[in-house]
Length: 180
Picture 1 (tube, rainbow, N blue to C red):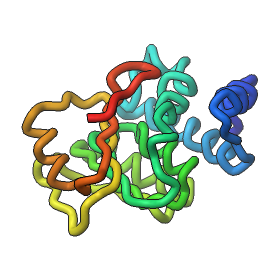
Picture 2 (cartoon, rainbow, N blue to C red):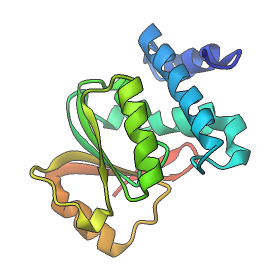
Picture 3 (cartoon, rainbow, N blue to C red):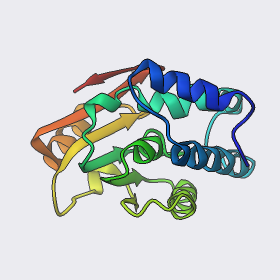
Protein backbone atom coordinates (compact mmCIF):
# COMPACT_ATOMS: atom_id res chain seq x y z
CA UNK A 1 0.00 0.00 0.00
CA UNK A 2 1.23 3.52 -0.64
CA UNK A 3 1.89 6.06 2.09
CA UNK A 4 -1.07 8.16 3.32
CA UNK A 5 -2.14 11.06 1.10
CA UNK A 6 0.31 13.95 1.32
CA UNK A 7 3.15 11.87 2.80
CA UNK A 8 5.29 11.86 -0.33
CA UNK A 9 5.21 15.66 -0.41
CA UNK A 10 6.16 15.81 3.30
CA UNK A 11 9.09 13.44 2.65
CA UNK A 12 10.29 15.31 -0.45
CA UNK A 13 10.11 18.65 1.38
CA UNK A 14 11.94 17.22 4.42
CA UNK A 15 14.69 15.82 2.20
CA UNK A 16 14.89 19.00 0.10
CA UNK A 17 15.30 21.16 3.22
CA UNK A 18 18.42 19.12 3.98
CA UNK A 19 19.87 19.06 0.48
CA UNK A 20 18.94 15.40 0.00
CA UNK A 21 16.76 13.63 -2.52
CA UNK A 22 14.07 11.05 -1.79
CA UNK A 23 14.12 8.67 -4.75
CA UNK A 24 11.24 6.46 -5.84
CA UNK A 25 12.87 3.41 -4.20
CA UNK A 26 12.96 5.16 -0.84
CA UNK A 27 9.32 6.22 -1.18
CA UNK A 28 8.18 2.72 -2.18
CA UNK A 29 10.08 0.96 0.59
CA UNK A 30 9.03 3.54 3.17
CA UNK A 31 5.40 2.87 2.21
CA UNK A 32 5.90 -0.87 2.64
CA UNK A 33 7.67 -0.33 5.99
CA UNK A 34 4.83 1.96 7.13
CA UNK A 35 2.27 -0.73 6.26
CA UNK A 36 4.23 -3.45 8.07
CA UNK A 37 4.37 -1.32 11.22
CA UNK A 38 0.61 -0.74 11.11
CA UNK A 39 -0.10 -4.43 10.45
CA UNK A 40 2.17 -5.73 13.23
CA UNK A 41 1.07 -3.03 15.68
CA UNK A 42 -2.32 -4.72 15.81
CA UNK A 43 -0.59 -7.78 17.35
CA UNK A 44 2.39 -6.45 19.28
CA UNK A 45 3.34 -3.12 20.81
CA UNK A 46 5.73 -1.64 18.23
CA UNK A 47 4.78 2.02 18.51
CA UNK A 48 2.50 3.76 20.98
CA UNK A 49 -1.07 3.87 19.64
CA UNK A 50 -0.97 7.65 20.13
CA UNK A 51 2.11 7.84 17.87
CA UNK A 52 0.69 5.84 14.96
CA UNK A 53 -0.86 8.99 13.52
CA UNK A 54 2.59 10.67 13.64
CA UNK A 55 4.53 7.65 12.40
CA UNK A 56 6.08 9.39 9.41
CA UNK A 57 7.32 12.55 11.13
CA UNK A 58 7.93 11.33 14.68
CA UNK A 59 9.63 8.05 13.83
CA UNK A 60 10.65 7.57 10.21
CA UNK A 61 11.89 11.09 9.39
CA UNK A 62 13.09 11.69 12.96
CA UNK A 63 15.37 8.66 12.49
CA UNK A 64 17.09 10.51 9.65
CA UNK A 65 17.80 13.79 11.47
CA UNK A 66 21.54 12.97 11.96
CA UNK A 67 21.96 11.49 8.45
CA UNK A 68 24.89 13.81 7.64
CA UNK A 69 26.79 12.25 10.58
CA UNK A 70 26.40 8.80 9.01
CA UNK A 71 28.83 7.74 6.26
CA UNK A 72 27.61 6.31 2.96
CA UNK A 73 29.61 3.12 3.57
CA UNK A 74 30.74 1.46 6.76
CA UNK A 75 29.37 -0.49 9.70
CA UNK A 76 26.55 0.63 11.98
CA UNK A 77 25.07 -1.01 15.07
CA UNK A 78 21.64 0.07 16.31
CA UNK A 79 20.94 -0.64 19.97
CA UNK A 80 17.40 -1.48 21.10
CA UNK A 81 15.98 -1.35 17.59
CA UNK A 82 12.37 -2.05 18.58
CA UNK A 83 10.30 -1.23 15.48
CA UNK A 84 13.47 -0.53 13.49
CA UNK A 85 14.05 3.11 14.36
CA UNK A 86 16.46 4.51 13.38
CA UNK A 87 18.13 1.57 11.59
CA UNK A 88 15.55 0.86 8.86
CA UNK A 89 15.12 4.47 7.66
CA UNK A 90 18.92 4.85 7.71
CA UNK A 91 19.29 1.64 5.68
CA UNK A 92 16.87 3.02 3.09
CA UNK A 93 18.95 6.18 2.68
CA UNK A 94 22.37 4.52 3.10
CA UNK A 95 21.95 1.14 1.34
CA UNK A 96 25.72 0.50 1.25
CA UNK A 97 26.00 0.44 5.05
CA UNK A 98 26.29 -2.85 6.87
CA UNK A 99 23.81 -2.57 9.77
CA UNK A 100 23.19 -4.83 12.75
CA UNK A 101 20.10 -4.21 14.86
CA UNK A 102 20.45 -5.39 18.46
CA UNK A 103 17.06 -6.18 19.99
CA UNK A 104 16.30 -8.24 23.10
CA UNK A 105 12.54 -8.83 22.63
CA UNK A 106 11.79 -11.89 20.49
CA UNK A 107 8.52 -10.56 19.02
CA UNK A 108 10.27 -7.43 17.81
CA UNK A 109 13.10 -9.53 16.37
CA UNK A 110 10.52 -11.48 14.34
CA UNK A 111 9.07 -8.19 13.09
CA UNK A 112 12.52 -6.81 12.19
CA UNK A 113 13.45 -9.98 10.31
CA UNK A 114 10.25 -9.70 8.26
CA UNK A 115 10.99 -6.04 7.49
CA UNK A 116 14.54 -6.87 6.38
CA UNK A 117 13.21 -9.64 4.13
CA UNK A 118 10.25 -7.76 2.62
CA UNK A 119 12.24 -4.55 2.04
CA UNK A 120 15.10 -6.60 0.56
CA UNK A 121 17.84 -5.12 2.74
CA UNK A 122 20.79 -7.51 2.25
CA UNK A 123 23.20 -5.43 4.34
CA UNK A 124 20.93 -5.42 7.39
CA UNK A 125 20.70 -8.13 10.04
CA UNK A 126 19.15 -8.61 13.46
CA UNK A 127 20.86 -9.90 16.59
CA UNK A 128 18.56 -11.14 19.34
CA UNK A 129 19.93 -10.32 22.78
CA UNK A 130 20.96 -7.60 25.18
CA UNK A 131 23.71 -5.09 24.45
CA UNK A 132 25.93 -6.31 27.29
CA UNK A 133 25.91 -9.81 25.75
CA UNK A 134 26.85 -8.60 22.27
CA UNK A 135 30.50 -9.11 21.33
CA UNK A 136 30.86 -8.69 17.56
CA UNK A 137 33.84 -9.97 15.58
CA UNK A 138 34.62 -6.48 14.31
CA UNK A 139 34.16 -2.94 15.58
CA UNK A 140 31.61 -0.48 14.18
CA UNK A 141 32.00 3.00 12.72
CA UNK A 142 28.69 4.21 14.17
CA UNK A 143 26.35 3.21 16.97
CA UNK A 144 22.82 4.58 17.17
CA UNK A 145 20.60 4.61 20.24
CA UNK A 146 17.01 5.81 20.31
CA UNK A 147 14.47 5.34 23.10
CA UNK A 148 16.97 3.39 25.24
CA UNK A 149 18.35 4.68 28.52
CA UNK A 150 22.11 5.14 28.24
CA UNK A 151 23.82 4.11 31.44
CA UNK A 152 27.52 4.26 32.22
CA UNK A 153 27.64 0.46 31.79
CA UNK A 154 26.03 0.72 28.31
CA UNK A 155 28.36 3.53 27.32
CA UNK A 156 31.44 1.51 28.35
CA UNK A 157 30.22 -1.51 26.37
CA UNK A 158 29.48 0.66 23.33
CA UNK A 159 33.03 2.04 23.46
CA UNK A 160 34.28 -1.57 23.26
CA UNK A 161 32.30 -2.35 20.10
CA UNK A 162 32.90 0.82 18.10
CA UNK A 163 36.16 1.96 16.55
CA UNK A 164 38.25 4.53 18.38
CA UNK A 165 37.30 7.06 15.70
CA UNK A 166 33.66 5.88 15.76
CA UNK A 167 30.61 7.89 16.76
CA UNK A 168 27.74 7.14 19.11
CA UNK A 169 24.59 8.95 18.02
CA UNK A 170 22.06 9.29 20.82
CA UNK A 171 18.56 10.47 19.91
CA UNK A 172 17.70 12.46 23.02
CA UNK A 173 14.23 13.62 21.98
CA UNK A 174 12.05 14.20 18.96
CA UNK A 175 14.04 15.85 16.17
CA UNK A 176 17.22 16.11 18.28
CA UNK A 177 20.33 14.03 18.81
CA UNK A 178 23.74 14.32 20.36
CA UNK A 179 27.07 12.60 19.87
CA UNK A 180 28.32 10.70 22.91
